[in-house]
Length: 227
Ligand code: GTP
Ligand code: MG
Image (cartoon, rainbow, N blue to C red; front, top):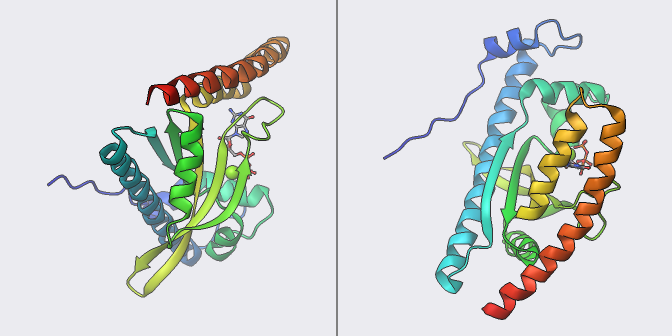
């Protein structure tokens, strides 16, 4: 059996990581935050497993996998606290749980456009999954040209004292949308790129987003006709 141990945050390590952060939470609060973090990691695993199971069921029933691959990430504790601070939230586990939804994140990369909405439907109709937020940047792309379906769902995690609902952020997008977003992200976050180049490439990428959408729709149709 392969046992994969979770990367546990250590109180002392976290204290030193936070160093001279101005509003650094006290020790008792940090320990609550670490407990909360473990809970979110567990929620992320619950949703990942559900998605893997859906994909396997499809494979058996239709000889086809809607999910190309998945990536999951936990927001680093340090950047979580920085984000909460920046947004003016209290740096307590309670306030962070109430206000920040992207602590645990899963990105689902699908083969085709229709797979995005199929995965959404099949996941959110499960009785223990509740949809909290939904932003459809495919129907309404961002000004940059960015497209993806963003969901926040909650799922119960069974703890020693009983179930606790945990929110998990899910971004669902096609391979084409993912390729586009990675390149656009690089352009946006690389600080040493000349601003005129950023504008030029930004416009170019916006045009490509529309072209990619047309290509993906065309390829989806061919794929459907071949089934
Ligand atoms: P935050 O509190 O900032 O997370 O606000 P939000 O959840 O309302 O953000 P939003 O839904 O706009 O997007 C969250 C994530 O989507 C980002 O972290 C990126 O991964 C992705 N994203 C959003 N807009 C863009 C974009 O224009 N380009 C790229 N490459 N990614 C984007
Ligand atoms: Mg977000």
